[in-house]
Amino acid sequence: MKNKLTFWILGGLILGILAGYLANIFFASDKEAMDTFVQYTSLGNYIFLRLIKLIIAPLVLSTLVVGVAGIGDAKTVGRMGIKTIGWFVFASLMSLTLGLILVNILKPGLAFSSELINKAPELKSAEFTLIHFIDQLIPENIILSLSSHTSVLQIVIFSIFFGIALAGIGEKGEPLVKMMDALAHAMLKLTNIIMWLAPLAVFSSISVVIAKQGLGILEKYSKLIFMFYGGLAILWIILIGFGYAFIKKKVWSLLTHIKEPLMLAFATASSESAYPKLLNQLDRFGIKDKITSFVLPLGYSFNLDGSMMYMTFGSILIAQAYGVPLDLGQQITMLLVLMVTSKGIAGVPRASLVVITATIAGFGIPEAGIALLFPIDQFLDMGRTATNVVGNAVATVAVSKMEGEEIHH
Image (cartoon, rainbow, N blue to C red; front, side, top):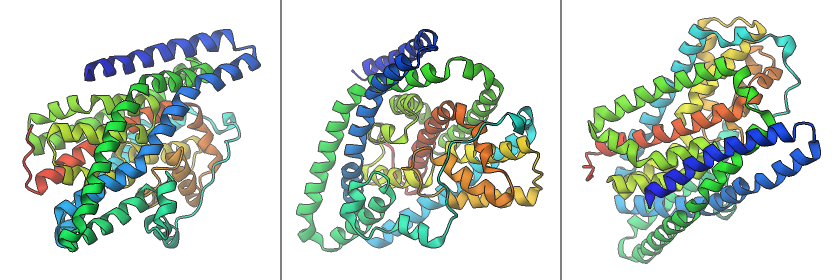
């Protein structure tokens, strides 16, 4: 049954490319027909993502509360939290540094001239402030946070404190823990049902992109796409290498287990679409619930390895295109700024572009340069989102082993 879904997703991807290509040929001169095609074809992805957003908040809340309550005391939660955040900081710095090294060696920005850049679509960008970060981090109303899919980080913070509180009151808290456990199982069952719409979502999202942009967009930017995906391949090798260091040959089984959430993340370019399935598959792989339900929700806010690499790669690329010289000190400063400003923005659409726009302005790089990345951002987003899935799977394995847990697979 699992393999069937994988093949259906792959089939949706291939058919989507074909349908998009045909639509691009036949409707190229008929704007009304193209708009109609895009409007109706995009419904599949829209419905799927709406259903995924429907279950994300209760799934994160229930699994994390049960996980933290199962861990027990605040001391243990704190110890696990330090290890988890420590790993995320290390992985983020590694990804950002890799992007920095590659963009300086390959110099992809030199292939573009600033005269050719169209006016960039407007992106809201704001300077990073400590108050803004705290607002994103600490909820003032958990009901509002649960009703907004952009507030996953706030749900995580509430769930950790609530789980610690339930563990602290012992038997009195058990009914609530059992209720949350039942909710978690119901959400995972609902996830399995919703996942059968995934092939339709994959077909829908890829066909719309190809219909609007055409296969020619891939050819025009092929060198840049090739460079970026080459960089992602190196990042995968490094991440899998770390996975091997922790669980040896079991890392190949881990990759087999996460192939469906990987394909979903790649085809839909949405981390949210892969989250429930990844949680399910890591559980099947043999990582304890208390680890996955703690590390994974945090990872979706703090550990986006593919997106991190893209941010330094994209920022320096724009600087190269405009001929803005940045010395090593400025580049390292930019890396650290990106490290901080990127935290907690996973729920924002085109989050990486928003962060890049907010960051480059402070280094004298024209914000309009973001238009360079817009035509192919969807294709780059597919790769970086899939990489985020690998990074979070490896992070979960790393924390599990650091906690001395056996992976019973």
